[in-house]
Image 1 (cartoon, rainbow, N blue to C red):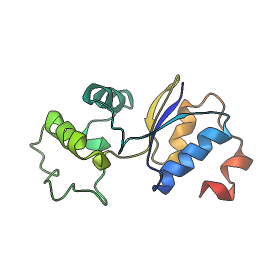
Image 2: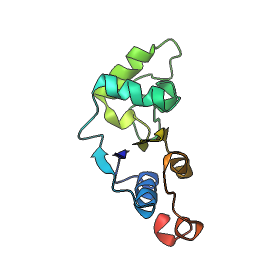
Image 3: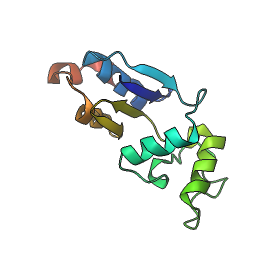
Image 4: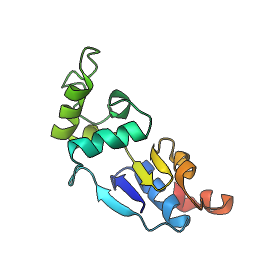
Length: 129
C-alpha cells in the first residue's frame, strides 16, 4: 500500500500526489496536520527515509524560529516533541510504498519508490505544476 503524508495547500505535495496517481497508484492520503502520526511512526518514517529528525524539519511558514529549533544542542527527542506539538514543522510530502520511504523534495524523488513511474509525457504535463 502507498501512503502520502500530504498538505493540500502545498504545491509540491499536490504535485507528488498527482505523480503517484499518474503512475497508477491509489495512495492513502493522510493530512498529517489534522491526523498526525504517532511518535514512533514518525520516527520510523524519518529513519526509513534516511534522514535525521532535524533534516525532516520545515522552517518556512512554521513556528521553527519562534521555538528556537535552530539550537544545535536540541536532541532528536526534543525535535520530535516539537513536531508532535506542531505537525506543520514536518517537511512534506513523505511517501511510503512497498519499495521504500522518501521525503519527496524535489518531487521527482517519488520515482525512486514507485513500481510504475509515469512516462516522461505525463511528468511534463501542465497539471504537475
